[in-house]
Image (cartoon, rainbow, N blue to C red):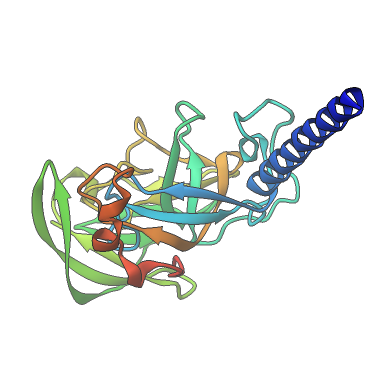
Length: 249
């Protein structure tokens, strides 16, 4: 009888291990092929995304590349089941200069577009992307809160989205004309004066389509935390309830 009991215990342990392995494989499969969670650590996408937002990114939106997989194994080059991004998409991509760091920005230019900033306004193919005043937005940098101007910008094709502007002066607001090469996109942060993006060739530059990880879909959690995340007893006072399940546009 003790032998039988030991066999039953061993069989139960084996089944538990198999269940954990299956669960892990399912989780990896979902993360690789369906959706992946990301959190926002910086203010470069204010007002669309705030520091402390947690969102789901669809992995199938643009097809799959090596960067769709954990640790980006060099299994193949290019993308399979490719769907090109559209102007206005908010996308996660691997930073071209290291192919490892995750960045999230808005796609404002696709292959063949002529993109330029003039006096703080975005021009695509020589035409201004019109903007309308829409109140104020705030940004915090080095502990200093700044009040900026909020606009609704309209991209070619009709996508409308909010941006924040601190100034219309400076190099980032008066750029040379960029011509987006084939197989690349041009990405910018909605917080136009506090974003390292494609306007800076040595910072981000053009983003290869292969580097796209996925398209941001919706926020599933958001917290304006002044405390470490593990102090969960503070969460009810810090959670931004109105942002939960908000779509990313």
